Every structure is written in structure tokens, then in C-alpha cells.
Amino acid sequence: MRGMSFMDVIIGTALVLIIFTALIGILRSSLQVAALAKTRSIATTIAESQMEYIRSLSYDQVGTVGGIPAGTIPQTASSTQNGITFPMRTLIEYVDDPADGTGSGDSSGITTDYKRIKVSVSYYANGHTQTVDLVSNYAPQGLETTTGGGTLKISVVNATGAGVAGATVHITNTSALPAIDLSTFSDVSGTVFLPGAPTSTQYQITVSKNGYSSAQTYARDATNQNPTPGYLTVVKNQTTTGTFAIDLFSTLNVRTYSPIATSTFADTFSSGANIASASNAAVSAGDVELSSDVNGYAFSGSVQSVSQSPTYLAGWGTATATTSLPAGTSVRFHIMNGAGALLPDTALPGNASGFTGSVSLASLSTTTYPTLALSADLSTNSTTTTPILQGWSLSYARGPIPLPNIPFSLAGTKTIGSTGAGAPIYKTSVANSTDATGFRALSLEWDAYTLAVSTYDTVSVCNAPPYSLSPGTTSDTSLILATSTTNMALISVRDANGAVPGASVTLSNGGFNKTVVTDSCGSAYFGSLTNASYSVSAAKNGYTTFNASGISISGHVFYPVSLE
Image (cartoon, rainbow, N blue to C red; front, side, top):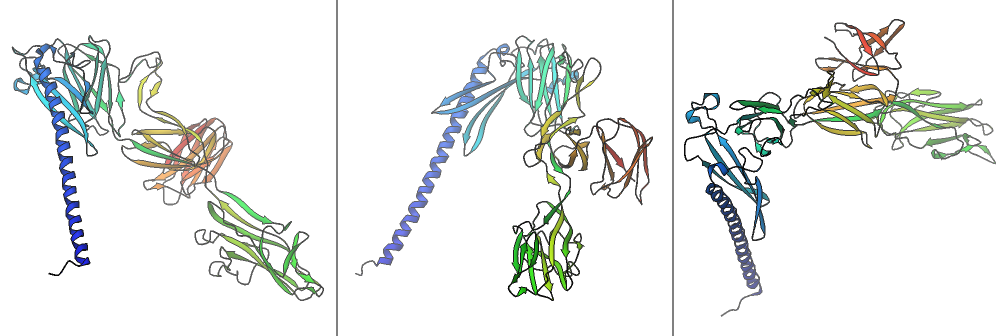
């Protein structure tokens, strides 16, 4: 009989390994399923044990510490089994059974028909928190009875008035006996209904949900003498309803910048530090001349500057060369790209033959040409004379440039009450600053917000304040800031489609009259104003002229203008 070949052994071994690996995987999965089932079984046993204990109590004893109804059962507890901790939550509440009518329509006049017990035991499995829930109703042995209290109804709604399900409603009342400290959740209609609440004037409510704004009642104190809303009052045999509006947070991204400003690269050849290359030319006594030897000056030569790659480049300006030209000599300069090649005449007409004096570079695309350099060709028809390049320059505009660490404040329009003198107390007031990159993202509830930057004047802004934030939206604002003046006005001109650039805005007051054309963001800035009342007009072809008077300018004012 022929023995097994080496290849047979390899194939057989591979098959055994495949089968063994599969069996190990099946075994591992089986063990995980068994462990999960055992953990769930323990959680179920804990929940059943808690439910049996509660149902062993008399009806009057069934309640939670700080809850409605009140009792001796903790709202939260935990049990440790086999080294695993199982958090447990017990919720007990009265139920108004619809069989005899609900609320004011209850035929018996009693809305606390029976108690509903819910026990929830949590455990961690497969990277997620799992929960075992047991629910049981517990009715009194005799006829239903009144608790002597009233009913507390909390409605949680969003910005449009629709109910918000799953919101956490925290209810406290330290004046009640026993004290109430209860957390529960709004149902699918956004409602928490608590019959049997003890009569009291001190119900404090806080409503929250992950990713949402919050709402609450407020205490009356020395500052907030007219809280809105104040603490809720529960009256015997009456239903007290409190409505609290929450919704998804919005984001406002604030960016701060310095204005666009002109910078210039200039070289007067005090040294050769800014010369990238030269051929038959050299720096001599603060000038660039043709190279010379015992035979006199070279007939031609060239020189090229170091490249300029400005950050935050907004536009190229003007290139200029200053020369001294004896008879028979010439200097013509050119503009080079980042690779050291001449810009084509299609981009800069006349560049191939060169320029004298100055040339505008405003038409050059900063995207196509983010880097430029200067070069010059020097020539003479005599070895005894040389042209002289005395200096050259290249101007450009930079900006807007991020301005870091700028403090600012925001204030919403929603109020939580007023002082004794009737001054409103605003719910949201934010003092913050941009970071080292000139940026700050703020999470805010839906509202209209004003903005103030106390240490600078805002000379332009895309998306000007006030900011009307809708729930769950993101808004961006970019502030261009300059030296602060005591009184300023930023007029923002918009139409139905957004900013209106190129509009003429006139601000006037007696002897003061100034017109500014709006920029690309629709902004017209007026600084160093006196504290007074002004008139504003705004006009642009195709729109109806806007006119307004009696505009008080004190401090930093943002004034919106709408053109139609």
C-alpha cells in the first residue's frame, strides 16, 4: 500500500485545523449565549423578588422614598450577584382608570384608582445595557379611596408645541411631608400624570433630555421677584398643569478676524539676503549692477528675488522697480511664479518683454498664483557703464486673518422673570471668547440672540446679529474686528435672498452725513460716532429705497436693513 505523501499530510492537517477552529468558535458562542442567559435570569430573579416584596406590603405602604405616592421603598438600589452589580429602579404611581372616567370626568371623583408598580433591573451585555422590566397593578382591597391631595400634570413640549417623549422630569418638594424627590419620564404624548400629589405651593420642576435644552420652575428671591414660571401649587381635588418647552440644542459657530490689510515685500539691496539667484549681476553699495572684471561690465545679466507666498492672501497689488539708467543701459523686470517661470502674457500682458516703473497685479488669481517672485534683466551697450536697480517691491492684501482669544457675550430674549422694578431677567447670558484659532462653537437653545464685542469694533460681519436659532440647526457668523471706538454702528443690508453688496448706506445726524457702500457681506461700518439719534437710508438699483429715523446709537449698535 502506498504511504501518504507530504502534500496529503499538509491538506489533512489544514482540514483538521479548519474543523477545530469552527468548533472552538461554536463553543465560544455557546458559552457567551449561556452567560448572557444566566445574567438575564439573575436580573429577572432580582426583579421578581423586588416585586414580591412590594406586593407583600399593605396598600398604604406601597410607595417610594421621595415619590408620589410616598413610602419606604428606595427609588434606586442595586444588588450584586456572582460579582456582577445589577442597578434597580422602582417606580410607583397612582393610576386613574378610564373605566369610571378620567380627570374631571371621573364618575367617582377619585383619580387615584390604584397603584402601578414598575421594577427595572439593568445589566451590561455585549457592549450594551439591557433591562428587565416587570409591571404590576396593585388595587386596594376595598373601594377606591381619595388620598386627600390633588393631581400634578406635567406637559413637555417642543418648540412647535408637540409632545416630547422620554424627557426626564425631576420633581422636588422639601415642604411636603414626607419630602418629595422624584424623577420620572414623559410618556409618548410628552405627559407626566401624578394623581395623589400632596397639597403644597412648593413643587419644583426640572425637565431635561439628552441633546435638548432644559426648562424649570424658578424660586422667588430678592432679584427674581416675579419668576416665570414660579413653583407649582397643587390644590386638593384639583389638577395643576405645568407646561415646559424643550427642544434640540442649536450650534452657533463664532469666528473672529482682523480686516484685510496691505503688506509689501520691499528690497533696497542693503544686502543680498533677498536675492534668490543672479547671473552676471551682483549687489554693490545698496544697488544691483552688472558684474565687472578687468575688461569692464558684462553686457547683460539678471537677478531674481526670493519668492513671496503670503498666508491668507486676499489679492496681489502692485510690483514696482526703481532704477538709474545711464545712456545705453536698460532694466526691465518680470513677474515669476512659484516654480521660477515667467507668468504668461495671457495672465499678465507684457510680462514676457518686461516692465519699467510699476505694474498692477490685481487681475492675477490668488488661487492660480499663490506665490510670486520678481526678476530683472539688466543690459548695457558699453563695458564702461552699467544700469542700476536701486530697489523693488511687491504689494499684496492679506486677510481676513483669524484673531485669537477675543472675548464676546451673547444674550437671548427668553426671560425667567423680572425684578421688582420690572426689569427682565434673561434665561441665557453667555460670556465666552474665541480660542487660539479665532473660533468658538456654542451649544444654545432655540432663541434670538444679541452679540457684543466690547474691546473691538465690528467693521463687517457675514450673518449679522441678532441670531435667530431654530432647534437642531447650525449657524455661522464671521466677525471682522478693528480698533474699538466708543460709539459705532454696523448697518447690515439684506433682502429675501441674503446679504446685499454694493448698496449705498447713508448715516446722518445734523451736520454729520456719511455714505458707505456695503461689502460682500452686506455690511456698512460707521465708527467714532457721537452718542445721538441718527437717520439711515439705503439704496441700490432695482430696490425700493429704505429710510428710517430716530435710531439711537449708543455704544456698539447692529442695525438690520431689509431691501425689497
